[in-house]
Image (cartoon, rainbow, N blue to C red; front, side):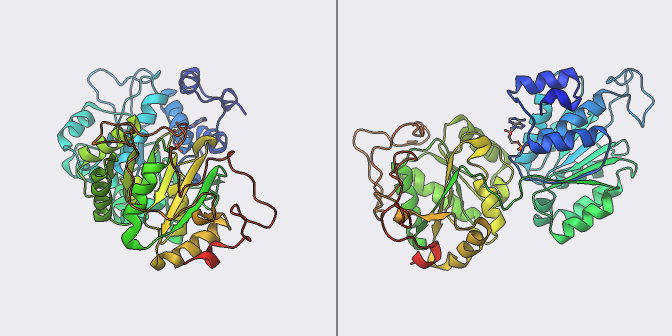
Length: 453
Ligand code: AMP
């Protein structure tokens, strides 16, 4: 299918083509026609599937193509003189970064239309947001807490909402936003279109969906248990106390473009960053205790390549859309197997290859088993790979500046061959295939569980 077959208006098609998209993703080809037909949609889809454009494009088309329903205004997209625009579409998202990303997508796709949009989220000064809101917007992207703040101050009215989107509903549940969402829902007209997106559908999410959707069409694309085929899964058995030196060791030797490291706690993320910086590996942390400015800077620096390693907790990293993440490193294994899939979904995007490395301490074997069950037997023991040697303390490579150096150095590009990789497998294509029934080191095949130390 082509975008042209989706009955999108020329200004949107132009924007889509200018973004370099050639064909709609599966969720786009299924959801866009439904939204244009004004159906409620219950979509089970994770980030990386193109779900933002799946709702943003038809919303823009609907709002651009008609006089606002709840108002008596002249002109197509333009409110009558001196009459501020009213919010006609509200998108609720769990994290500040995701809200900003969605807002950026509305800018990209809506650049040829005269509609106004903005994002409001916590952690930054409220006053500029209030000023923009008073000026009037057609589309508002918001995190629930900050939206309620604005509502209580009277800077926002939701009584003209025609289309409501709940994005990453399951994450909003996990983050404790359900009471906030219910308060917000009470203020939105019942006569509206609702789009409900969630990566998983636990019972409370289904209940909420049943309550707020009217005769919805269910759409399911790439299930959460199906990670990108192009991602290689590697397991490193390492005791907790040695994880940091394993990480700096790996990052010293492997060729990575961008590495995203996941820790269980905010404190743990900070400790990892300090350790890496001490070893002159440029790194930044992103988690809920950081100010919004620090989070934005960390993300921008990671996107621009100024820092090669972003250390994140799950809450902050969910939904991040960064191109060119070559490695996802599970410094701490997650308790929830599905979170593993979300984490590694940051790499191997749009068919690119990626590597997911997991550091597994003796306390984390149960977690590994859960992940293995979800994945199938796809995780490969790093120690089974050719050339593997147990890691030692980081080695300073002679005559070579390592990634970073307090932010000055650039991360090593993934197309540059690693100078030395004693415990990291050679890049795909340089390995000899193992003999049948044998693993790559020539030993008989064994499962990760039986190999666990
Ligand atoms: P999302 O799932 O909305 O976070 O989108 C993931 C990434 O896919 C974003 O970087 C989008 O710019 C990109 N994307 C969305 N739709 C398409 C498409 N039809 N073709 C190629 N890339 C796309």
